[in-house]
Amino acid sequence: MYSAPRCSVVIPTYNRAHSVGDAIASVLRQTMADLECIVVDDGSTDSTPALLASITDPRLRVLRGRHAGVAAARNLGVAHARAPVVGMVGRLARQKAPGDFLRAAALVAREFPAATFLVVGDGPLRATLEGLARELGIADRVRFLGFRDEVPVVLAALDVFALSSLWEGLPLTILEAMAAGKPVVATSVNGVAEVVQHGRTGWLVSPQQVEQLAAHIVTLLRDPGIARSMGEAGRRRVRERFSIERTVAELSDLYQDLYEAKCHADAGAAAQHGYGAQGTRRSLR
Image (cartoon, rainbow, N blue to C red):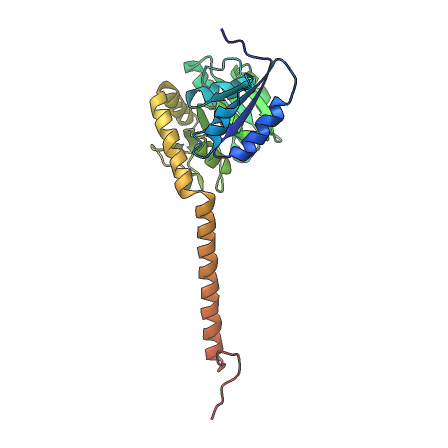
């Protein structure tokens, strides 16, 4: 039977052969006997698979698909790595309404007593939220992870990503969760509705509707097929609609339109005041 080493380093990757190669080499240079390096490959189509296949060090494990979340959960210290994991990422402040996330978690825990809830982020409400978790009777099921650099590792551990915000701009955490193939349950506020397609990439609920938030999370946990389908649809949507290439192209088009509009406006103003194309005043004769 496989016995998990005491130190597992998880490296998420997608089409980053060069950087993941350097990261793996750095980990495997360590001399600890109880070390393992887990690479979570999110379906790379570049030379990453060939690179991983060429490494024969027994301390390297490559996980794909359904095994990825288990590895990430273990790396985060989740006690029941194969039980449901639901998480939120955001500043622990009024805007994000993290208390609503915990209240929804308490309802979900009634249906899934072994579930773990990850709260990633920090802020002025942290102490209050820790107290609320105790009041709700879910303190042993909630992990306050604080600020984390390795958000992809956290997302890999989740079965469902939830966001209970009262207001938002364009929430990058939701884009990151969708890019990681996670179904999203979020409040339908401001830019959130532009990202999450209700019933296709996740579910949208009204702000402060804790019961609805919990009900949709439970639905996704009960039906992994729906969760997987929504997650895959979300990943496609981010790649097609919110990729870096498309964003740059749209910004370039916007700047070009603004530049041309300004040129037309300047030309019109010049003509109105009797100036020619070169900025010289036309003769009145």
